[in-house]
Amino acid sequence: MFEVIARVISQQGTCEAGHRVGDEFVIGQHTPCGMCSWAYCSAFPFAEVLQFGASFPWEKDDGTSLVACPDPTNPVVFELKRGKSL
Image (cartoon, rainbow, N blue to C red; front, side, top):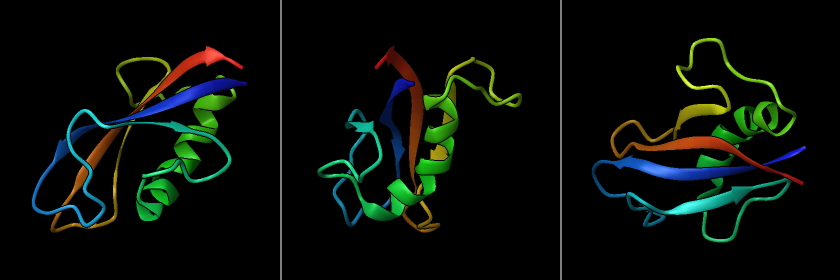
């Protein structure tokens, strides 16, 4: 199993959770402190895949995935990246 880091790479409009470009969160089995629960729910299925060593065929880099929060008027985009082995 691997650690997965979620890093904000884009934020438009007003994020109600206050996320800004450069914010990082370690994704595990619980919502990371300070991470919007809606964003976590969007990211979790992708993070699970990365945690167990798999990758997505549509992503250009193995061990990464781009995920957006579900707010279409104030989108926050996270890059999920597989980290060290736990």
